[in-house]
Image (cartoon, rainbow, N blue to C red; front, side, top):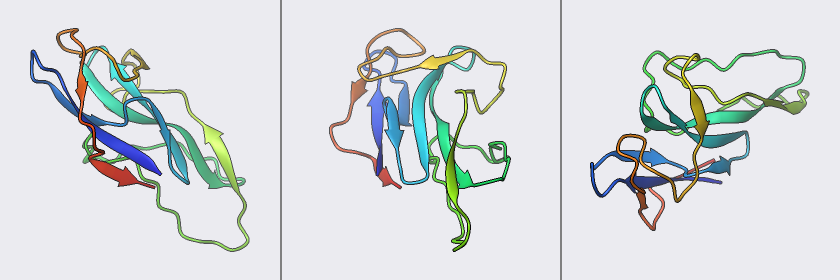
Length: 126
């Protein structure tokens, strides 16, 4: 079960709702990244559990909102085997943006000071 936390910078008051590092659910794994072009913290897919023989690309919905956790819902097919597919971290706004992994405790993407984490998870996702 994955967890999403509130992170806030005490100096510039930037807020983000992210996992704070690598996290996983039953059908996906995410990594918190910092996009240097957007100056944002985002959770992106690193692994996705899909049906065997299906070559899908991750497509971000047109209504992309970073506060919605990356939950993957699949219909249950009894005869389909599920396999893990890996993806390189990429910014959901533009794939050409420069992203790098971010872990708690980490620095604010806007001002460079350390971010503070709320002790309780904001959301539990699977």
